Length: 88
View (cartoon, one colour):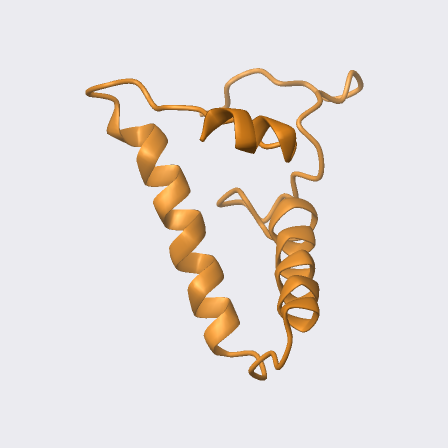
């Protein structure tokens, strides 16, 4: 199976034993995706479903609010002009 996945460009990864946070992130993503898809018009084709999933992933990665103060995190890079010192 791993050979087939690699041929498709899919990297198979396993989470560490006794480290549930990693699995929780994936489970939370799946739950959020399923809820979002349930509120969309039912896709009639695989292409329509893929377009819906692509739209969700773009929103999930680039638009949604990730912090409690309303800041948007668009990329996992640091802004050299910002002060990242702990606050409070």
